[in-house]
Length: 550
Ligand code: NG1
Ligand code: ZN
Image (cartoon, rainbow, N blue to C red; front, side, top):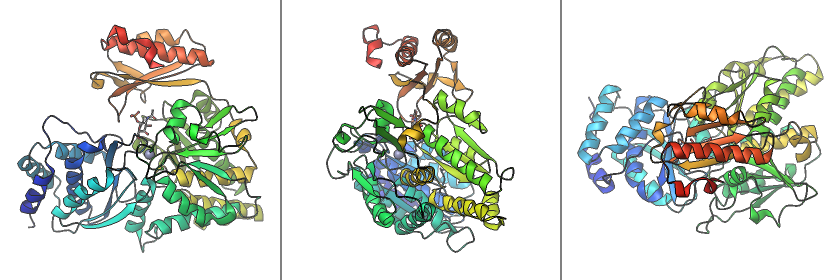
């Protein structure tokens, strides 16, 4: 029986000791905190990734080092399962336990318990692929990760600096190589080739759209976006902005998808770039989110968020299934979270099945898998479209009976290739949106008019202990602290079109408050009042109450 290489683990773990008094948690986005605190976590994640691969019969596991849309001093790490999806939930707990072992001895004990409980066969080889975004703390953290992989003798592949969705793609491509489910060539180049050639076929014969401005958030999207632009040639002209990946402090700073979505305004750096009517979009720091926007003739800013993307894409997919003669054979459904704008939920649920799930991509992804074609997007611009294995089979074997059906079928097949089905992907989603706009001859204006967004406001309240906030009904109602939901209901009733909910963040030490209403000033006021209720509930300093929330 092969045993854990305890001496190798001990020698290397001693170089990455966990400080006392810090607690790490594997949350919805993996481990995420200040980059300077993550060294011991990275080492342990390396060991865990290797164990997970051994457990899964030497399938390749992915590790991504990124803190997405968070500010530059933050960093994070998450594990990617063999089909390119999020880590299985039960391992989130194992990851948290292993990360918090206080000493090297305790770490070895925790690992031995894990191996024993999960019956991990240590004689199996471990295979891991990893990548990082452009954060300055990345290289040192990757070195700690490599020590963890080395301690277990893993066969490790460094995919360098790339986007989160590329890493997810690579994991799936490596694990399906040479099988009938082959996902594409297992390189970044293979990814770019797959997406761009599907896009070119989708828009062939359509008049080229005017150039698209991409706000790269001064992150890794600038690097991969540049390469994508070369692959696209003249099928789509990309104008990259916010590409300062080497400027300290620039990442996600006053730019990027999170800035645009939460501030509901144009990144100031684009003011001199964007012309009225021109389409533009923002990626986040690891390029898995996408938000579109444009300025109208009066210079007024209009945002097209994840909900608008879902509406555009779902309508197009439904139209194609009908044109292909597959109506009734393929059911399209939508998955949203409570953050979806009420306007979008109304519009979509009048047309399609819509399900609401708790925040966090794993919830959306799993719910979308229950449809033949599942469209899921968070309002913040993170999402994708999933085609079930049966649907993929139908699309590949179906015999169209007219030329029109044949054309629609070809489009559907190309859509399955332009879309990164492993995870939300800013660049892939951008090609998807551009393809739909080209087909419909839509500018941002027509797209925006699908439905009207209700004015809304998202604010955060810093609380001493967010774990006292517990929710039900896909996070739309509070069950704890007792009585707070009743106060909220009472307040919401006084606002026309009012809706509000409170939930603890999974990634920050805050409670988030969302509110919407028919009129902007009312949405703001409702958010402000609910935040006040939360603040009082946790005994916040009265001197610091209200106005700072807005
Ligand atoms: P939390 O911090 O749990 O609200 C945020 C986003 C999620 C998701 C995760 C992972 C909002 C309101 N919340 O989660 O949608 O993207 O980060 O990055 O946008
Ligand atoms: Zn991200």
